[in-house]
Length: 325
Image (cartoon, rainbow, N blue to C red; front, side, top):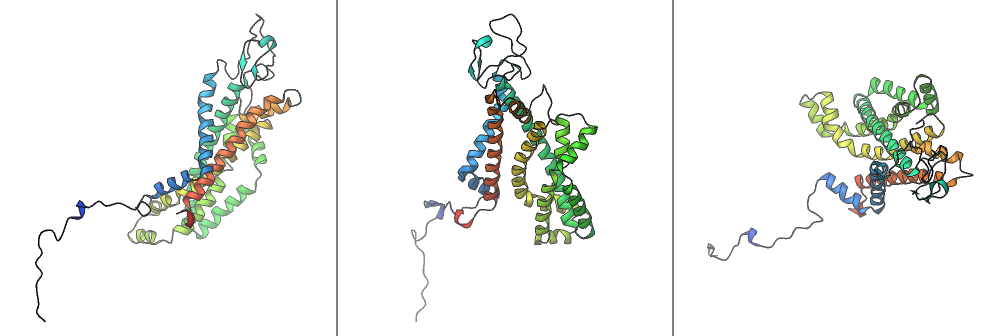
C-alpha cells in the first residue's frame, strides 16, 4: 500500500477563537461562597428573613430619628400650659389633652411616645445580641478548635469544663451577677457571654475532629507548620460555614434572653428601654391598655422569625441537596 503524505491547504483549519463559543453556566466553575450565595437567594424563606431583619435594623437606626420626641421624654399637652405628668394616648391621632398630636404606636402610661421607645428598644436589643454573639463566636470557636485539635488529655479536661459550665442554669448565673453588678446592659452582656459560647465551641470542636485528619493538614505537619498556624490559618477557613449558621441561630436566642431578663426586672432598667422592658410594661397594663404590648411583641416576633429564616437558609446553602445543584 502506497504511503501518502497529506499536505494541508488554506481553509482546512481555523482558529478556535474565531468561533462563537457559548459557556454552559451549569458547569462553569465558581467560587465556594458564590455558590453559597446563589443557593441562599434561591431560598424564598431566607430572602424573606433577610428583608425582615434589614427592615428592623434600618428602623432601629432611623426610627427614633423620625420622631420629634426622645425615648425618655414625657410629652406635654398640646392645648394646655400645664405639663402632663401622666397622660395616655391611643395609636393614631390622639384625643383629649393630646389633641392634634399623632402617635403611630400610641403613648405609654407616662405619656412617652411608643414609636420612639419601640425602635430604641429594638436598637438596644440588637446591639446586645450582635456584641455578645460576636465575642462568643471568638471565644467558643477558639476553645472548640483547640480542644479538638490537641485531643487526648487536653480535650478531656476542656470538655469537662464545658459540661460544668453547661450544667449551671442561666438564672443562677444572672442571680449571682446581680449581686455584684448593677442591673442594666452590662449585666445582660456578661450573662450572655458566660453561656452562649458553649454551643459555638461544640460546633467548632466537631468540625475540627472531622478536618484534622485531612491530607492538607498532614502535609502541613510534615512541612513543619506550627499548631496555631494549622488551626487558625488552614482549618478555621474550612469550618467558618457551620459557625456562621450557628451564629444566625444564636442571635435570636440572645435577643429572647435579653427580653426575658428585662421582663423579669434584671435587665435594662428605666428610663432606658429594650424590647423586654417594653413587653413587661405592656403586660402590666394589658387589661386596660392592651395596645401598648402589641408593637414590642410584633418587633420581637419578626426579629426571631427573620433570623431563624436566615439561619435555615445558610444551613441549606452550605450543604445543598443533590436535586438543588
